[in-house]
Image (cartoon, rainbow, N blue to C red; front, side, top):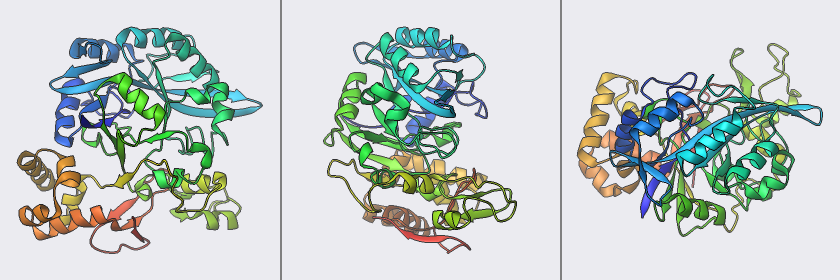
Length: 410
């Protein structure tokens, strides 16, 4: 069965999230986007877990749950902040569980390490990644362990300000138990392919969404049984026949792609950062080194290398942003949102329009400018002003904006 999955989102109980991050609204937006399987996010929070139990119906022998035709998998992200060998680390990890019973056992164990009710993504002080893996696998070998947005500077396993130089340093002997690695918005699989140590792992992409309309902005396309254990097996085996491809942001659009200082309005590429020895020439403080810099630090392969067992990917731009570009308006404007919903109503879902619909059909059914914008995104010929230091990148589909890079992806 072919379906789109987004495993990593947050609920209304996480900080800086929309109040609309609740099951009925999430199910509605999953249909709009074309998502068949959605992570619940935040099962570690007692109030959200209670809502999930009230809303979701179990699917016997599938390890999944259902609401209004949308499948859900129990998921949560945890933040491990700890010291190891005299250095501090901050690593985020996504956990997936096949039942409420197992999720409750996880919560019981984690409650010894942090206040689970303080945030949908709890901080676990003094708990290492090794201990996290050890303890959850004691509960059940069925639990999936996915290091989150692995390159983000501040909170990830490889982060320039918080992470390790290898997975083995972080997870020790449990490295082999990692189910998959999440690339994050500021990197795509091609950047990760430059590290041979990552070849054995499936690379997944998820939205990490804090609002309903952003779910699926990164996602995974499978052709396998819509079943927890089938999906786990596909990821562990890196099964190219059943894990078809990932849907990606252009990594330059992510808010930590390049280096720089947002307060100083300064964006730099890795070579420039090295020339300045990592110091901001404006304020003389340490620059925030982005994902591209960190990848180049650890890479043992040249740019453009493609491993034999790699899972393909497609770079996309959300449909409302494409409509906005065609209209020359903000994506949040009423006219853009009305047009977006009209397109969804007429053509089924966002993924059907952006991925499945034939190019000739797009040319027939849409206005010339909208059709042109969609095809530019598909072909990868876009102008981008890359993101840096917490500032999202900006994509321009029709005109080269100042300081944009003209990028062509294949």
